Length: 508
Image (cartoon, rainbow, N blue to C red; front, side, top):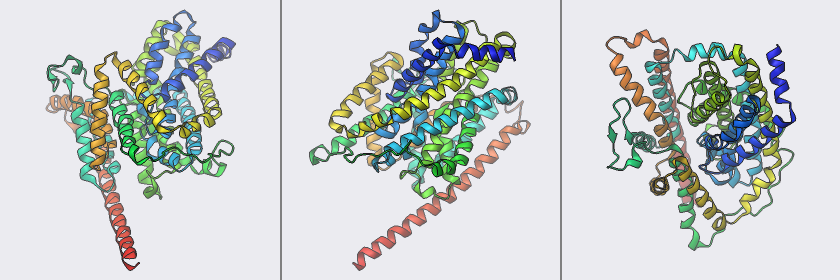
């Protein structure tokens, strides 16, 4: 009890509160600018915390983390460019909502459910950390391989009516992930003698190219047509932009999405980019309005944003209890803990209990600041839509280039960014979806690395000794069957609708 009070006392100090507020504000800015992720914000501000106390420094880093993950929804909704990999799925319904003149509503939904997802994640972090960590320790090569297969099966649900094109996109993403040094034996693959490709393509650079550069190219098509793509009508925001009835109606969706986010966050190496995709797919497949997903409904925004913020709490569980970072951001937080002489592991509550509880309270305070700052700035964010794209997009391209260079301090990444943008543009013209490519790119290395380990272990350790593996494979089969059936029904429904429209036009 004394450790809890010491942690609370440390966080409610005026200086700590100010540092948390600054961290959230900076994190939101970094998250909203494509390429400048939460990880980069933590990297840049980690040296600033050296002279601070442990509670102050770690609280500020946590605020940067939460602000950075949440800020990605701003550019995802307004520009169709995810500010962070965790906001990829937010684009699917967030941008269509903005195109309908409901940008304020989309932003409000994203912010409120980002807050809710963060709080649920923190609650599970505090209550279930020991139990969930014991479960996570059971995940080895077999389990991670099955989890990757299960996640890749979600591609079928994301492909829509044209399944072959979606699968082509996913395979392309997995192939792009093979560029660089091979796992285990570290042989160079598809590098063509370029040392810049030894580490492979960065996810941030791929996302910027797929979303930002292709968006600019699509707009360039229309320049000669003299069309104005700005939204001129005044976007009215009543209250926070969402009614109480809509909020209550999304609670079940939010709870399921948050649980998915926390579960994915616990598993090292998976991250928010996968959790938002899986959550969006589960929400779509279990919804009575699955036909409306992708056209601009709040259900998709809720699923994505609740899941990626729930991942924050999930990722902190193995970090604090086992000293295992779940992604790049938590790896930097691990460095921050070590700088302040806090050793993560099973004994962290005994040795640094006050700091642990200070982290919990700081995360709650950061979530509150995040919601306040983003709701108060919502009307300012919406004004971005009123800026003519011929002025806005060049600025976006420059910021994207800065984000690409900042990823590894290499100009080469800007060239690959443009190449990915051109590839995305050609894929869009061919009506091949780019979303499955992202999932294939993220999960490809996890699947390959663990498949190699499984092939080495199979003779001495057969798969039936791993019940979690068997359960995940069974779940994968069920997901594939369910998704294929749903896609076939959607295709038949769409064909019937098109036939009715053609018949109606013929009568006229």
